Image (cartoon, rainbow, N blue to C red; front, side):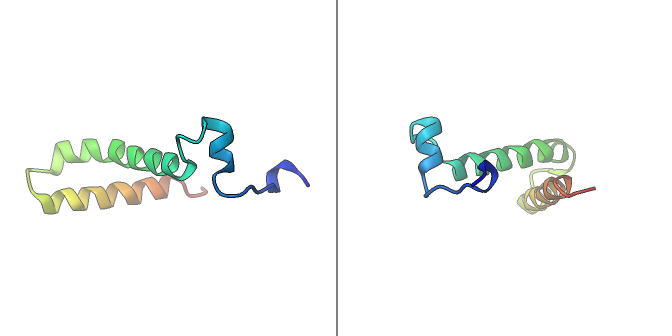
Length: 73
């Protein structure tokens, strides 16, 4: 069995790497949302204009740009 295809039970990786305090899924989600916020910030500075509708649209565009940046070229 090679290392690339080895799977562990839920929580094993977290327990070994971080003492169980930080879960792998939470870290991934946190990194994703931070990247989306980083993409959205310049758009918000330019287009927000204190409207919630614009805010939702800006975050949708930022999420799209984030997933698009992860695609194979």
